[in-house]
Image 1 (cartoon, one colour):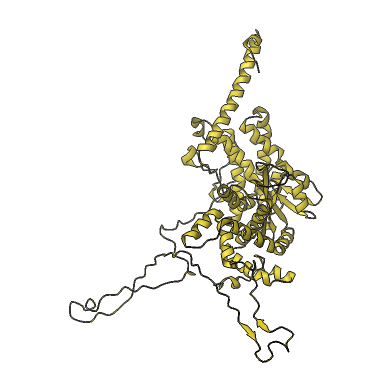
Image 2 (spheres, one colour):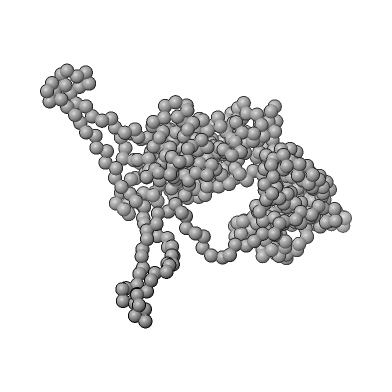
Length: 523
């Protein structure tokens, strides 16, 4: 860049070159400004709709995709027909059958049951209208009464067990505290599933006359997490038994880390693995984002890993027995950013290279939607991808390679194209196995409750607290992934955990092996 007018060359050709460079630089800066403005003040959804940009819908999730070939490939592209569907009539959904019913009878008076002709009217039917009522949380005190016994004859002299006998105290997950498994489960679920910080829970309990300081809640949470270590250890083993592990990480601020300032960024890592129908989700608090975390935690694992493009995963992905798969959701997101950063007039246009790229990606997602709609087996999905997706990937790669040299590398479009090309080997690997997903959204969806909670409680008060948070998120998200309601599961777990002794006992407490009938009559 020229620092002074005095340094400008006299040659017209050189001046034009400098002006062109400045114009390109200004264009990139304007694009960044529009992009940041959109992130601050625009819609948060990545879904591009006709109402937003006056163009054909693209997609956020695969369910919203309609097949649309690239403009210059319309004649060659295979047509994918989306089956017609019926729209449900508007109206309320029925209330759940498992909720208790209280019947309130509304009847006519005896006088009103007399017909105008003087005869007694007969009941011929009824109309039922259900209304939903909520009573504030039911809170009760459980009084454990332990009877004492003594022998009045010998006063215990003849007994090896002493003068007085008393029934043993019930097994509790936190002995000598006022907390039952129900109270602790409610506190844990309120914070880690509903993003309700301890200080807000403290205020809620105060309104009903119960004094439980937030420090006590935090202490209970840490103690409970420590008690769950045998279950978490088994979850780790289950995680490594799956054919694929999805990995993601997100920042977290932790206070009181040894040798680190409180403003230093730490990370919450998330892993999703286990069986297809018995998934396991594990969160791990770590002070760093180093790829060594993955190598250490997934030691001896063999199979697929699926991640975003963060370079910290690459070293582990190159190990023998590991097949590293990329995420098309991240690739797509970069092209969405290009459109978000466009001037308003350009957003209304249907063309543009970013839209063309998104059309290619949309065709890939449409194939995945077709596989789900038709409930194809992994073998059938593999064949479909080989027949359809493989050709689209080849065309898309050629198009990207041709466009990349013509695109400023520092602009958003150049970065999006560069990301795709640098990640291409990983991005196309999902077609190798019909069990694999096209993106890493399963783990991103699992880590979202943590991100939401982080906005409310902002930081963890200590490394031990951060670890406890990770452990409890692991239990809650694994329960949810296996179709269990988190509160019922944790109440059951915290009640049975003190009684478990053997590895078989602990395994029976895992969400994926739990006898669900045991959750139906907990109270």
